[in-house]
Length: 195
Picture 1: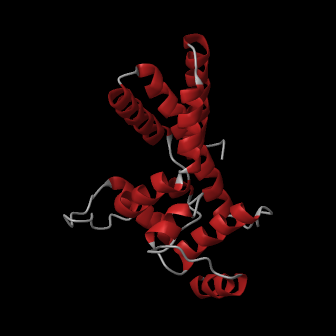
Picture 2: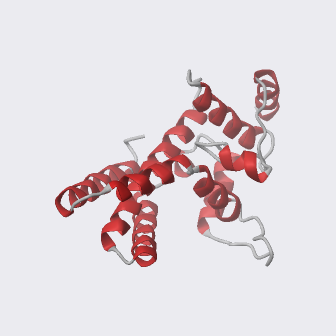
């Protein structure tokens, strides 16, 4: 994972943001924002996966967000082990962090809290990337929650591309009706059919 530019830039930005918070003062609000973003990361992953990466029609208006990321993600579905679609690159990380900073600063009126939102985003992004890399490897996680998320993502790739839009969390899938947790034998059958 660390061979790629995106995770290395994420680590650099995380250290810079934490140093900024350490010198500028942090409060319980900063911790609450980062914790909330981590706990509810499925609700960040789900809409991006469905509407940006899969370019599904937006609710109410029916428009599709045609974008280069959707094309890259379609290639990722055809070849799930290709590294281009597996891990975000530095340009994508830089753009996302810039947008998160601007939105966080704009919503709160505080550039300091904008930095906090970047910290939360990077924590979510690294968690997402780690789950994604494991899901596309032969590794079977020991933790039941980690194993369920990985198994669901494999199901998304090998059986039903409209199910299991979360990558590191299944919470949004459960609440939004796209959850499917295949049993081991059901997933094995799906994997065999794709090979």
